[in-house]
Image (cartoon, rainbow, N blue to C red; front, side):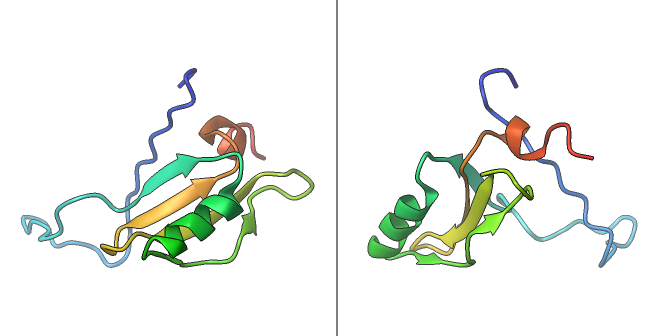
Length: 93
């Protein structure tokens, strides 16, 4: 969106759910936050009882668009972006 909010929709092809069977999973897959300093924010999450789940990844070669996965103290996954969603994924070849 033009206000920097992005929504990602996921469809997992494998494993397939049988037709007519509902999924027992409830809740969200993960949240994503944008931060000017994702490394510091990841450190703050870890210092607050959470942890880093990945190294910092460069989402676009030759551009400073980085992301990292963390986990809060309750086991919820937090993805951190260094740029807004439209910059991270828009107009990619």
